[in-house]
Length: 278
Length: 252
Image (cartoon, rainbow over all chains, first blue to last red; front, side):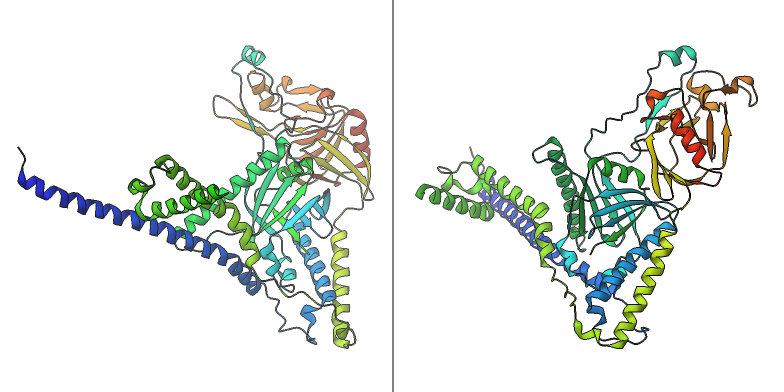
């Protein structure tokens, strides 16, 4: 025996519920699609916006220049001198800070570790790459931007900064003699890759030299992909809050493995980096 | 080829349907594309999109920034006396600042220690005169049961030689006893003083850190010390004779 009331009400009830489901599902698709499009648009805009803000922030002040010469700011000889002045000024400022600093000189393919202005380690840069977006920085802006050392704000690395090993002190001599001697690891087998997030939103990535197809090359790709995922996560978080997504133009250098490790271990947590880009 | 085009067409049609109706409501395609295939398709599309967003977007967007105007090497300005004046002024400024920067490197003897590779470099008149292996801090973090702790690392930065000693006597600190499970004696107890352990010479860097010799020659080149710098006998003698009180030591 069937219940007529139930029979008549049930189809219309399930229909309305399926309609609701469909609306929810469509809304979900549209939201996802809209967010994706929004992400693509914002991600495309943000480098342009970043470079424009750099150009505005570090525009050279020529208002008090005596004997103003038209076209001086686009003269290659003048700009080259200004860049070298900026580099030396920045190194002087870094020398005054009393800590270990790094100078990355891309035109000469040399990186130097400096303490109080004294070069303690010279490293050959095997290869480097500058983010395409930095091509948009005006030539007269570079000397102003690079005339002060950048500060390391944070880093992401494949190795430890300080390889601390905890040892619990023995209670007596018997326990001491039974304890294994901790032999420090000097093999240096772990691959060395790290990113230093610098002030003004620039990122310096230091990679050890790797042979194509070697396990270290796989580790490098894994490190870079892990970093891209972190960037993507940060960008998505920003987009979800309707902010401009996370963006950092990158300067990437490749150096010998030992030098990469030495630089990373020598630099303090909030150390200084001087860049000489062109 | 036709089959491939047909299959791609079906895939596109299925993707459209997935978006329009959802996976559960496409019976008309069930004969060609199973639900599993639809799920696979959806996962593929989402993964491709994610890959594009993670790797493709950062790559592509770099090239959307318009390139800045490049400088011109213009012979036009060379004839302008104001331009020449500006160039000469910058040139003088650059020479001055470079001289000041170069003056930061000591002309006298100085020592550079690399604690990562455990090597030392001795300079005289800015030229390297000796290099070799040394030992630096082990990075061992020693903890006791009563919450005392020490970290055995060599400090980094610029230091000056505070004092020089021949035939130094090691006054053992508390950690030397703690590490061996011995009770810590009074400050002036005879067990604190050890002869010959530091070699023939010692140079003080301040705060109890020394450059000294060692009886553990085999561990040179490794990070095994409690923060001091150990050298072998010959190197220690050369360093001792080259550096004076006030000489600079750079540790990185």
